[in-house]
Figure (tube, rainbow, N blue to C red):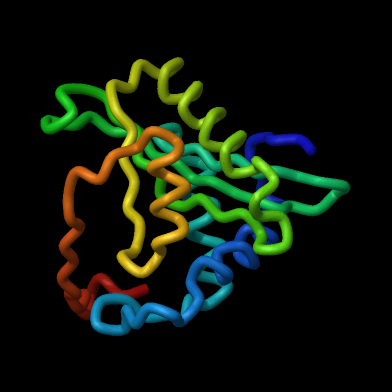
Length: 159
């Protein structure tokens, strides 16, 4: 298995993984539409790949993308300097509990250290109790609640 930077041609594989993360077990319609048209996803994906403050890594096994993690880096008052946010970590359900997620997080932590980050943060939906056990075992602590409010974009801001 190889863990590497994501490339443009990995887009469809990453979307397939993200759809596993976006299962409708937890109703979020109040603040986000579950539908993401492929063309919009491709634009978002390319913007993230092109952004020097973001990184996407994938795990590839026998030519198949089996995991992905995207991270962004930002200055933070609360962290008193540079911080990394893990936006998504997804391991294909067929490959879970094989250490792939641990390896990806380890590489992400090395990246954060090399960039001079002082902390790493992430969000995890409340219903993901097994995921919380993973993060706690990796040394992460529950420190806050995430609060979200839906807003409707203005007509001029819609694509």
